[in-house]
Image 1 (cartoon, rainbow, N blue to C red):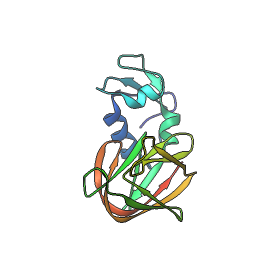
Image 2: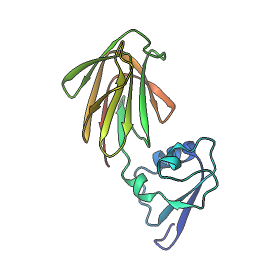
Image 3: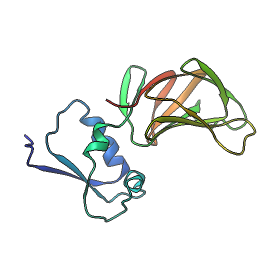
Length: 168
């Protein structure tokens, strides 16, 4: 029942925004969406140069253009990143083969970061600095064994393959 002249204000932090964007994926929202950051860590608000207790600010553009990931035929939007852990543990010193759009890489830790493009950041077995792969707007990631998938910190499940799309 929202009208274009209405304003929707989310009060909370990263979890609130993450849950909201995934609940309304296919729901048209004609009005502006504001965030009043009240969460504990507020990483999403921080990326937009806001912090706990700031006045509500518009996030509609970011919510309409956030990337999505499909894991096990389930699509979820994400705001800042996806982490992949083999069998629920960190990679540590064991390498995992990762195929990104046909290019094979070996990592001991891996995460997908949502920024202007999509980048895959990972640590190779003995590297001190992260390796970065610029992925572009559409990415298919395949692993050599099942990995746990965490979207914005929430454990989603396990998969050997996922598809990421930059914008809806």
